[in-house]
Image (cartoon, rainbow, N blue to C red; front, side):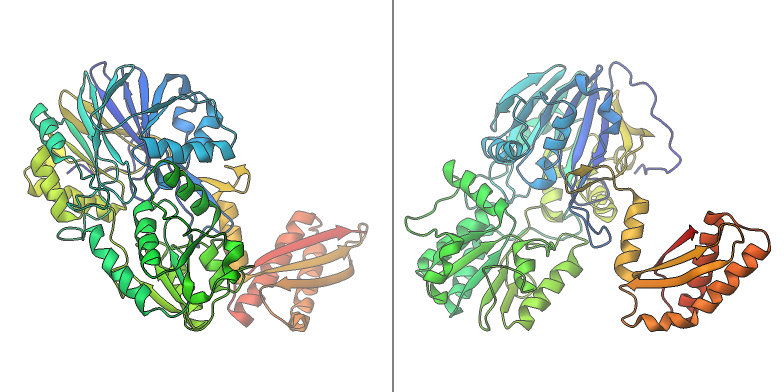
Length: 563
């Protein structure tokens, strides 16, 4: 197995018969999936998704792939191919279209419909759209694309086979091999076998569940569990799931109808996505089942089910606000049942457990994957991946979609099935992989950072700014104001000290004020009258005192004025 090396330089010029893969997101993380293929001077993008921030990124709404590597080559982009409609695969498309609004978008019917609703919100409507389905072939420049049905936790997911003069690349997208899916649309192993016979030169394969042994439980097994949960519940039921999980919403809808309950959606993305799914026939809603959230109080609590966003504990989601008694319409009553019908995305554990604790404290009965079969993953586990490798027999493998441990686990599975160790490439975001003469190798590395979205601001937040936010959130801040005589340098007023998130009683600062005065007097006596240097004196003196007296490291903001 070849490993990424931090000292890799820029990749060399790609040979005319070569195919280059530049992952700009999704390798080394769960989310932000984006791969750029280059061949004969043209580019093809597969997926363009977002990553959701964790608690160490305060104030950040979304994290985008870094478009810098293709910014000067946007005219070379033939198309953006979208494997399915999850946010971590389509969420960054509106931001890419800001750079070039007419990039062709390729995807299945549901994927494009979910994206279209998002693009309207962003006022991005110029891009041509090409609706495709399994078995279809379409050509963009030097890229000949064929689409294969795969089963995932959202309908209409596709794998994409890319034929070029450099060879055949197959990108699985996110997939699993549920043999009894709710919509009857299974991963097309016959098509995989046919591609395997043709010869897959490079396989990009989903790694998310590569560490999990065996086979994923079928979606059909969840229905009876939900029925039992609903049957036992004597009050209101709130189900939280991903806003794009059409299959899970359908199961909740069916269970609600069987118990004579009405259903209300909560959360803007849930309303939007389920409206699209219903209009296209992917979601069946019996007559007189849906009610508006504003009509909840018109129905007894034992006759309603609320389907909400927020299964990952997102701070601003409906469920998190409900858990913190911050929702304007929905308030937990003792005996309510809350079902978290999703997997935990790595990094979100603390947020989710915080929400579960908040709901439990309010008297809710919380049902989640840890105590009931209310969710199964949408990603292939080790047994399914082994099966997949044996069907495809790829010549080279590049594990994608996962943290580093998932990529290594997936690579080991490929080797176990007979793929030569030297033909399995472990890469991370920014590591360039070239397929030349049938062999895939790391050829270099490009700069590839995080692009943070904060409100309407894109890319203005730096790691330094995030560090400041973390300090403010964890340690608080102290401001110290002094006024000096401009002629003599003597202290005229202050130090005036204020704090936030640090201490309740600001009288504790009385003992540090003489220390600051003494330090300033010494500095000015030594001839130091530069305001910046005096600010540093205040910062050091205050910081030493706080650390010694309170074992804290707040942000210290010194202000020196001259009178």
